[in-house]
Image (cartoon, rainbow, N blue to C red):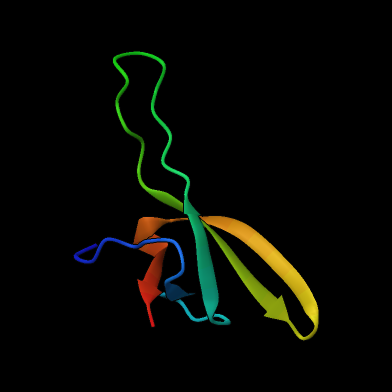
Length: 64
């Protein structure tokens, strides 16, 4: 993804979804050689009045 996504940014799934706010970068590292895994982001959104959250890989979301 060309743009680095930061906490507070508004995103949506590339396939379509509610607008979601990024809470945190959830990048993890492998225990062997400390290799970074693909960037993952914890996102929050409202489904009607019910709050939802999930972690998405960077290549599945885009900035709004």
